[in-house]
Image: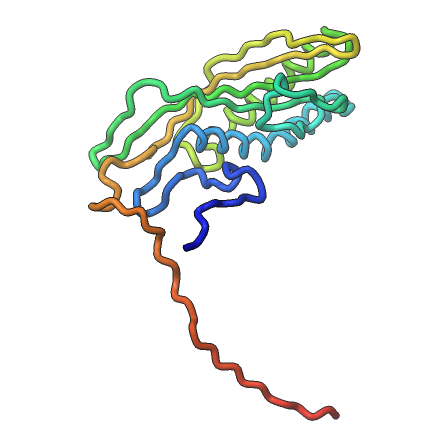
Length: 219
């Protein structure tokens, strides 16, 4: 009997598609789907916004974040860290709107946090925090479909806070609140008529292979 233990070369959630299932059960989206769509959009577009902000300032004031998906307060970041981005999806808002064909149109809340690590000058750290927040906000608001995934995304709120300070640096926090609507979170009419725990059938497998070897004389 084959082993049922799976080993993954990296965290398994990196391998998930935005939809948990395929054609058998139709589309099936959840909080992780929203989260990854946000990360993909920010990582794709944020460098362009940072470049343009720096171009206007005339120097590389902002750096492209290289930290995503980790809560900085759970570990010690390297001294070179400048900005870390975290996306949290608290859940849905309102009641899903059931369409006539069974599609559930659903709106999800999403919070994008920017943890900014500056110098000992708190005013400078504040300025950096506000700038990173504005760039991240523009990434989402100006690309509301999240690369074709969502029906629409709206910006609802933005707030700032002080992080922990040390003798060598100060930290700032920006939290930007959005709402994203999916046209079809799932369809109530999809799914097979009977339950099944068997894997999906694989494609045809060749059992007999004919190989012809031809000898060619050297010139």
